Length: 526
Image 1 (cartoon, rainbow, N blue to C red):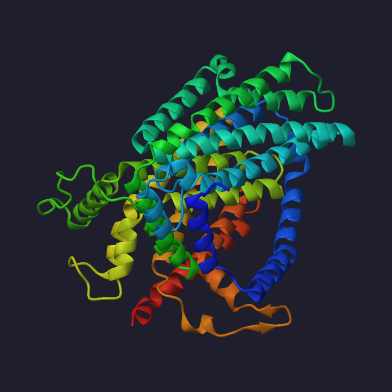
Image 2: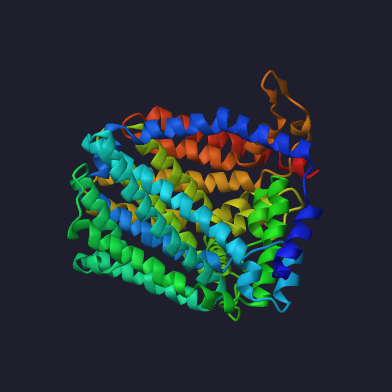
């Protein structure tokens, strides 16, 4: 039998970290209970939301294939960029150090982790494709056999998209600088195809859009022909061609990149296990590098003190955010994408659960994208429990640092909502108002999150119930309360003109939580 050093080392590692049989049985029991109590009801509710008539009508609309193709292109751009932060070739730090500095080839040392990560990503995209194919069949009212055919086509498309995304993910890890340029070029090319739709059939996301269009128009009557066979063949061929360059990408994996990514992921996992998600995400915050010669602190302000002071802090926050341009650009794109999603949800003639879920996800996206704009808010919250600095009070300091994120969400959100409302033919007032509400409440949720402080000791006490101890669930909800509250606001934002009471109630709840944390900031610090 051929001796495989990597396999032997992994066997020793797994044996040293093996779980006892009782731990495995408990993990299995916990997984089954979570699936029954949470996953199954969530999947059922989600399926009920997306299978409503207005959602099915949106899936077979003429614009739906183009939107689906653009989402696929966005996934590939994200995979290229994400590979530079956390690639698929990842093992624990000790194994990474041992394998990366040994004489083993990269593919034998890290091939298993890439295969597992790629399989998980491909399975996810295949399931999404199957769900979309099933929904298209349901929208057309096809028979069970035809529904299976359309779902199978969706699985093939999703699997090809997942394979290409996996190779893009590995490319981002193997060639970080080249991947950044490639992602920018891909994003620019996607924008060109939006401006010139005649070029779309010659692009991979155009092939996905063509397959979507064919499945939506002829669901239940799929037959072998050039209308869907040619784009599917081209998509599969592209996936196979990219798979052939995988060994070259493995060979280009840098030792320093592998070790730094493994260390970051291990540190992030430790914080996430302790439900400190802010610290977990902060491990991936890039170091400032651009504009280091530009002074953020200038000479004394001129003019009226209040306006001059606000201008000074605004310049400081803008320059501080611009020193990590990639992070700032990603945040701006996220805010714009959230505004477009809110506009799409606000354009519905009749409110529905599906559009509420879309708007809630858009609000969560805006909350996450505001990270680069709220570094000053986090600083103001951190020093608010101590003696005043800079010659201004705590509340005044916090307000000064909220000027930048408020201006950013209003400018980016209003512009993106206005343009998307014009292109979609949606009411501009509802789109702009919904985007403004989501953006402002996302800033307020960021302020509340910055003032939260450490975990209260009372949440460590057990909460016995007939279903079990709920203390862990309470700690988890506390750790993501900002996401929950902003999602609640986002779900009610499309109702701002139809049923404003719901939107006002959600915004008031978020404001009350933020005000309570502001009043208790010194107690938390003490």
